[in-house]
Length: 177
Image (tube, rainbow, N blue to C red; front, side, top):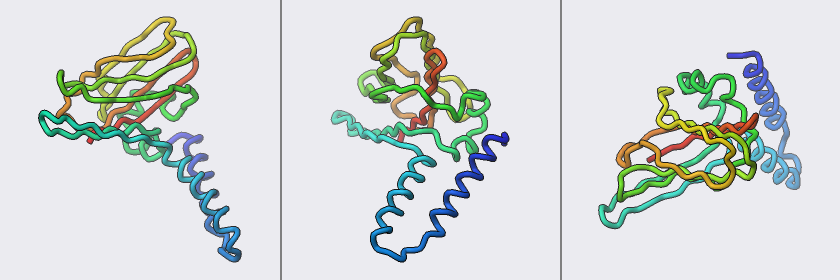
């Protein structure tokens, strides 16, 4: 664990202690405390968006969750952390409408997102073992990215998305259930 990670955990522990030490002495403070707790939870666990898909023909249901990479992910998936390198925890790129959706007819998943800035862009998808499932570099890219990802519709699991555009980075966790 690096010094910065240790400092991050120490800061998180301090915040939890500070929030936990507040008493519920006044009813008005209870809502404020809940708001602080919600912010801490969001900072630790990140945001997530879940979408369910259903194939009427085969009666197959697939649920895909796109979520921020959390501290526990960094600890749990060391092989992915090694594959991403020092950029694992960073995330300052804004991508809109990130979606991983099944194509039931052809049996694969389809990744899409939008980037407003035009710059050289690299897209990488890894499995939990750190193996590259998809990698692509696009020069002077902006707009909507759409690509087939070589993950079979029947294959459930956790994957990691890394998008690098110039000096900006976005990491997401993709969970298929």
